[in-house]
Image (cartoon, rainbow, N blue to C red; front, top):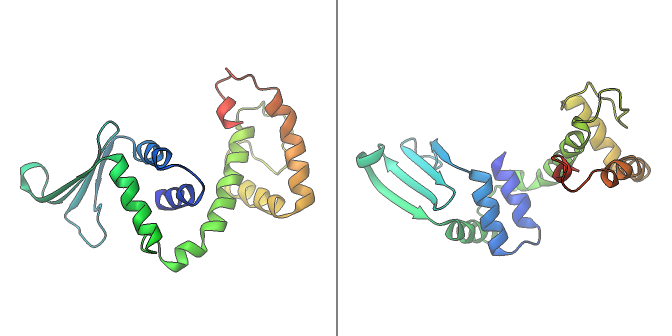
Length: 171
């Protein structure tokens, strides 16, 4: 979920500017209802060039409370919540290592996704992103020898992908 992606990103060494850019990318453009916990009458508008607008009450002129945050201000607010231990509950924080392991396993599946179907993957695959493959890759990542074999299998593919290839950033 977005909350885990954000927490995971903020836990790693990134500048405030990079974290703000990440939020801008993460939220994109759009709207969301029930944007504030416990407030059924809340809304959020996300605008890439501006930031986040939070509203309570109805839409448009019916809102009785509005807060606008630039992406930089949103980054500062989230950083403050994290530092104060208020961004995630303890059980959510305990799940971060599992979340990151599963996210890495899915990224490895994306790495192989557009290769020809007859290309042998180093994990059981049905040719698309699936939970069975995610579990298998997670187990491989937890085993030092299998992790090294996985990296060795991926290295020639990475090295053979041209920088202007549309899939370069996924490899």
